[in-house]
Image 1 (tube, rainbow, N blue to C red):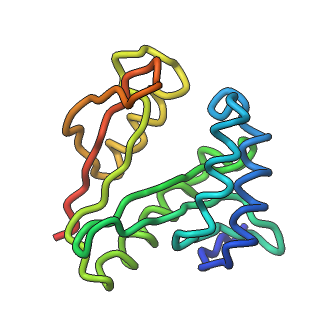
Image 2 (cartoon, rainbow, N blue to C red; image 1 turned 180 degrees about the vertical axis):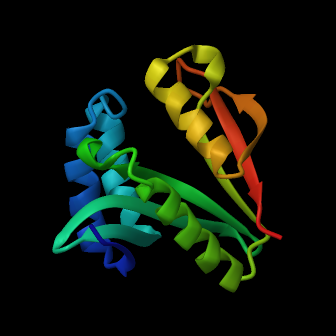
Length: 154
């Protein structure tokens, strides 16, 4: 099995984002949020993991400030999880961000204080990728606490 990471067009990313959110209802169970994600990938840099002729994962990268990159959205189809694809996507995004002169990469996910089994896996995945928690936040309108994490690229 050969996995390649490639930059894809926004239209492809939106379709892939929609397909993955439907495959992972335990992570993406709020349709109104999913629509926001699907629309959001149009304005970001998108990388997809591909095996043979099938896309199996997506990472959407943002550059909110000149020296800062941020993972806007990332997921891998359930049947492809645990195969190092998420790590490959982050490694590729890290290389790309460094070329753009970004010194940090950030990501926001559900806080481990929320004790959600699925999101604890996500939190620990990001830790393994070199991200460190900075602070918890509860955005307006949210009922859950989120954790803001950072990875220093240099």
